[in-house]
Image 1 (tube, rainbow, N blue to C red):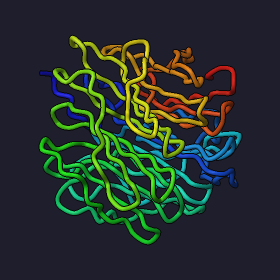
Image 2: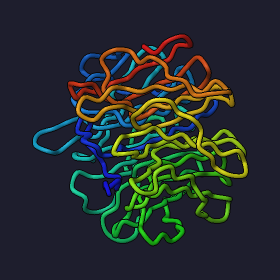
Image 3: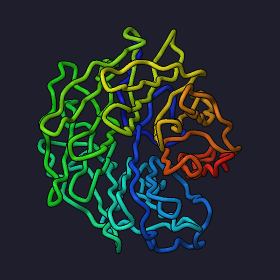
Length: 368
């Protein structure tokens, strides 16, 4: 059986390995973050050697993108860029020389989180916070040995979640209570698991998704008191299934995306929560979906890639009735993150065939 254990990846080196999923929440419009300009000044996109793994949008004028830049050897540098309504500005991440950022979330222009993992999987995971003036490191207080964080979501300045994998292949969930990050109890899974994405609609409602080491999809639900394991459809119990992204609009409306193997071919997976159970929704085409976002019950986006040797970006849209494929602009390779604030404003990030960062935007009629 093919192994579907999820690991942090370098963009472009897919080779049949599932990608990291990300999720991003939305909040009320706020003042745009004032990021420090990179050497070339603000641009409509951002092109550096590396990959962007996640994007979070607060309004048409406020968005964040996070990922990593390739450095010497096998090391990498964290990358965070801010959208101010006219251009993307790269913002310094002080104190972290070598790390991958895997997810970013924001509640306003003055409150954002980014998480990730260090190049050498030793010590605590990476957590940084934006307070409206700069990014600073925040202790994770994750117990045990090496840990990795793959997803972050924030419901308010006093309530946020980060998920990933602890030592021993155990699922990891951290909670921000407004003062500190603390490790939360997680349901026990015999096979261990990696949690790849998390979303929260309030302090009492959240979802986390991922997969076990043996390729069984995992869904956890937060009810305001505890995390509980929720049954998930598994279209490929023999070859493997994984969930990589999740988003929720309300207690009765949520989406999760990922992929599964069918006769050794990658297939897209989309699940929907209707308030009672998760069920699979038709998703035409091959490939893997890495991230999902919803602006309303009638407008949602899912992104990913198809093909391993020469990946091509995948974009899908939900119109309230069905998921359909939407053309991606030329020049992309993989898409790893997506965020939307309305039916006319969405962002997607990833990388190009040349292993440089990629940012594209939906303007209401096309992705550019």
